[in-house]
Image (cartoon, rainbow, N blue to C red; front, side, top):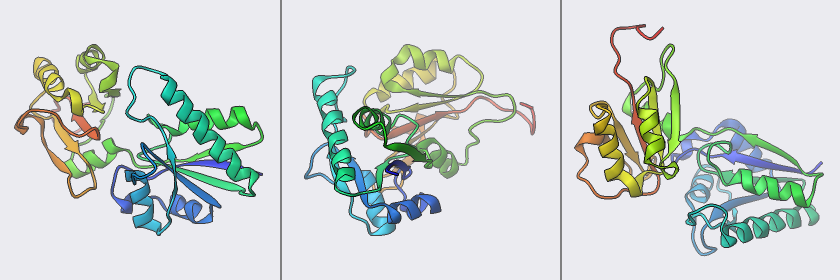
Amino acid sequence: MRTLIGIGVGPGDPELLTLKAVRLLREADVVFAPTTSLDRESRAEQIVHAATGIRARRLVFALDDQGGVTAERAAAWDEAARAVVEAFEAGARSVGFVTLGDPNVYSTFGYLAQTVAALDAEVQVTTVPGVTAMQDLAARADLRLAEGREPLTLVPATAGLDEVARALSGNGTVVVYKGGRFLDELTAAVDAAGRADAAVLGTDLGLETENIGALKSRDGGRAPYFTTLIVPPARGGRGEKL
């Protein structure tokens, strides 16, 4: 059986890899990592090497593209899938693909898996969950993501500020990913919703350049692409939301 495994490696700290992720990475015949250029080591590749010593093979994706399925993005998916299929044809039985966070949460892996399946229906696709940025930031900032009956809403900033504003109008925690380019607008939206006091911002989690702090204390301007915003609801006494 030939198996393609999407392996979540967390947001940045190599110690957040699960035991299962480490085992399957070491057992894999080939390990691939996404990048925007063959001469650029991606964060996922760095995490895997730091945790296991494994040097992943790079697959180029149009990760910086915007505006849906561009020609460059589609071509990159196709080429990456062909590289995976070629690895199987060369004798690999287990191929790992590492991805930041979790492979089932806003991950490139899903597009790769669909494309590989279209090329070779006999390839089995599985995933290994990884720690997400919102979990890491919540732990580091001592924030409870959800209590009792509270909903938890995850929104990519790329979905638009209207989508973020709708989430903020609810009564649960709102998490916003990919908000670095829109940080001023996001801050204004959180202010307008009257929820700025408890909001926490985290950038480059697990790296030397990481920064974690209150949203209202930021100086303004843009932030890195890997930016996570958590906006918890107002909470009272213990068990109030049960």
